[in-house]
Structures are given as C-alpha cells and as structure tokens.
Image 1 (cartoon, rainbow over the protein chains, first blue to last red):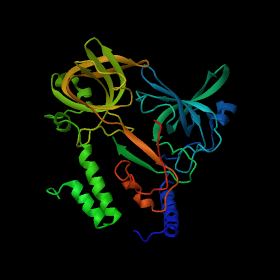
Image 2 (image 1 turned 90 degrees about the vertical axis):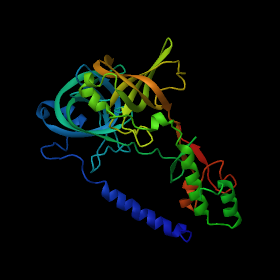
Image 3 (image 1 turned 120 degrees about the vertical axis):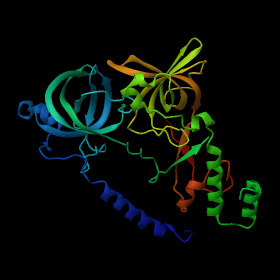
Image 4 (image 1 turned 120 degrees about the horizontal axis):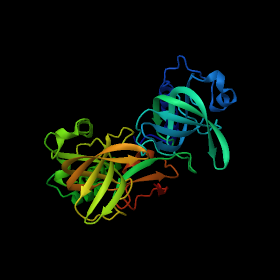
Length: 166
Length: 199
C-alpha cells in the first residue's frame, strides 16, 4: 500500500470512474410505448396530441402535498441521463405535477430530492408561480424512482466524506 | 489483546514504530468499542418483535403487546407531563438503531411519560423506543387521514448525531484518511482541513 504514489493512484481512479460509470447506464424504466422526446415544455405547446401518452420525466421535488387519497408532487424537470437520472447541470425543462395514487411519506419525498417518474400525461392544470400564471402538465404516476442527490462541488476537485461518532 | 491495556499497547506500537496502518486499525477497533452505547432494553429484541407493517395490517391483534420500533423524529409535542413524538419508522439493525433509507415502514406516535426537551428531541434525530402498543389513531398528514400507531414507551434511546466531514486538499496518502480522527492523532502532519458538513 505504501508504495502507491500519486502516479499510480490517478490511473486507478480513472479506471474506477469508468467502471462505475459503465454500471450506472442501465435504464431503470422500460421505455416501450414511451414518448421519449416529450418534455413538459413541448407537451404544453401541443397538449391535445399527447394526452394519454406515456412519458419518463425527472427532476427536483419542489413541493409535496398529501391529499385525501393521493399524493401530489410538483417537480422541476431536467434532461435525463441514459439511466434516467435527472442531470441538474443542464437547463431545466419546465415544471410538472405528478399524481401518485396513495400515500407517499413527505419526509422521504421531500423538497430538494431527485426523482424520476414513468407515467401517463392526462391534462394541463393552470396554476401560479409567485404571481405568474403557469401551465402544469399532470402526470399519473405508475413507477417512481428516488435518487441520492449528487454531492455539492467544493473548491477542491476531490471531496471525501467520513463519519465520526461523538 | 483483552488483557493488555489499550494505552500501553498503543505506546509500544509507537515506540517500535509499527506501520501506521496497524495503529489505524487499533484506532478503529477502539472507536467501534466506544460506539455501542444503547441501553440493553433497546439493543435486545422483544418477544415476537412485531413489525410496523404487521401491526398496521391488523392493529387489533396487537393491543398491549410489546414492540420495539425506531426511526426519525418528525414532530415533538410537549403535552402536560408527557411528550408525544411523531416518528417515521425504519427497520432496526442489530443494535436497535434505525436503518434510514427511502423505504420507511410507516409512522407511529411514541408517548413518553415525562417532559423531553424539544430542542434535543427535535426533527431529524433518530430515536428507538420499547413499549406497549396502544392501538391506532387517525391524524391528518396534509389532507391524508393517516392511521398512526401509538406506543406507550417504557424505554427509549436517542441516537447520537452523526457529523459528516468534508476533507479539503486531498492528500497524497489518501488511504490514510479513514484513520484520521481529531483528538486521537492530533500531531500527525496532515496537510488538509476537515470541514463539518452543514445539515
């Protein structure tokens, strides 16, 4: 172990990164019969053509509301990677509302968490963001996937977390 | 190793300039030995050990049975001489500590027969309780009528906060990081800072 120098470590890290990246590219959802190209913005532009279609969208949870028999999540969507993970470094593609038929624990599906949904686009709902009116595509959720949020980038190129008990 | 005092073991290691790895492993063993602080009633399973899911399915079958549940506090309600804690439950590990994940097992209310400081027993802290199941009660989560399970608590344990550190300026000997604990190897010349992560 002591004979490892930085000259050895960098290629090792590179290999490890490539290895991990190759693992993560498996899509989590079955994409058959899914309208892959549709985004919240494109659906708003031409809703009639797309009602009833299946979509896979994902992004950051902005708000969680537990209703009487369902749960409603407001999500700011981002382009998805090949593994259907939202890519926060890209430009957001508009908000949408996700309806889950049942109870979702609001402390788990909390504000700021990343999620991807496979569901059916059902309608456009008018809402407001601040004082602006906003058209939200509504998605009936069939499958949900929560993601661990990527670590925030610091000043150094490496970050490392260790836990300490006090 | 059991008969040799840990301190003399460490000093002899340093005197004979044992490899830093071995000292590090000794440090890890030492810290692991310190970390199991839960009282016995919390770390030992209760008879039958009914899970939240089982009790939620048929609550009437479990009235007055002993349960041991734990999770993350979401609300603290000081009422007169008692404190009611709303807890999002998770499966427990061998020591009785909740394994927090994206799959909570449900919510319950822990009724504790004394005043608990709400600043300490606060949101996001982990708690495990042992006590008697007292039936369920309906309370709203948002607009959803949630069936909370109620537990009359006999024993409880608040788990210590886990502080996460970021290491800045990654060192050359990166494989030693795990073994750097402030206060134990204070003089080891590490060229980087540990920054506590803000919760």
